[in-house]
Length: 363
Image (cartoon, rainbow, N blue to C red; front, side, top):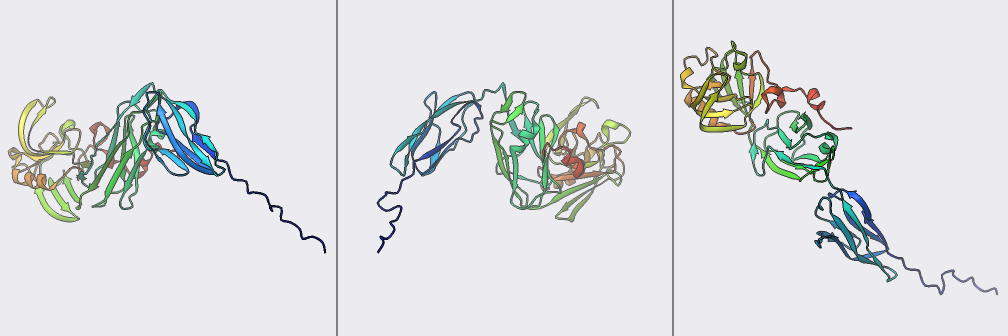
């Protein structure tokens, strides 16, 4: 009988894999300090990995059997060296090696937010990121800024100036929405040799009620609604139409700050340090809702102010106590609309098409 065919593998030991490393970045100049910085292995496991700066500082990272990932950013214009090893399935050690240098920015640009951690805002609150210098590469910076919400919320970024990017929802925020704003611009190119100085973040929420004030300069009324229900309807006096600088601007204003007591001054109207109570700032142009008992006889009948909404003391206190930063004050009826010259916040005067047209998104 013929001999049985023998197996090709018979008597041959299975060849064990060698460790193969992927180091990112293994070498180079001008590397972004924001990473990623990582080491991966196939055909074995990592034994140890270290990424060390020229000053001896070891970068923090997380090590698993097949991957090491840096968990912190690196510094600008600094040299770093890889070290460590991996052991292959064949038992052989493979060294982790390489070195690189991070980029050197011509200047750094910082970012500041208009919202803060653990704060609560009204349903019209825009998000504003203010940069310390003009941003040339707006698309790159915008990609590094994200807004996350606890409920589906359509919204978009708009560049209102070269130093300001604003985000707002298409419609007012839904009450009780939780929001995270992440501006991860460290290591991001701003254009012209500038890079982001630091990341900034904020987590906050929207109030559990929708408070909306409606200010009608024609009827001289000031109405306060909560969750669509009319709570108060007050007589008011708004800016006189005889002087353009005094006209209360039409459009959606946003409550920004409030003071139980403060003084008012105007170089244009030539008055200084006039005391008022229950002052609620609704525009960067200096428009307030506040107490003015001196115009009570005109409230509900004639507009005589320099642009503010005048209420009686008791009525002003009611609004003061009810409102918070971010609540909308919807002004209608005047001859001049709210606009860029009025500064914060004219965001809601733009329809959605005009708003999204100011985005730097490339797709």
